[in-house]
Length: 93
Image 1 (tube, helix red, strand yellow):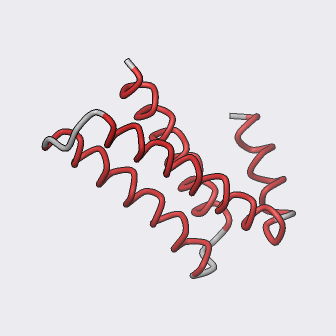
Image 2: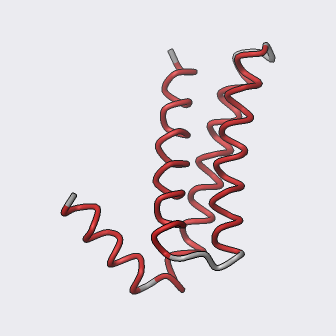
């Protein structure tokens, strides 16, 4: 929990600089996840995975654009990053 608190404090202090970097990085990672998902076909399972990735990326981008509290946008960044990495790994296997 201490690591989370340290990163949250750092993100909160430099939110003006970290927000654009996070949007770019998270969007690129989400695009890679979407590419790997669609490389495995277009069945219902892949479409559900694609929906989850798209929604999480949009939630984070929306939180930044609507100037939500730093804790909310930071949590959404972590959530979208974890799911993107998870789906990339799942679709590589």
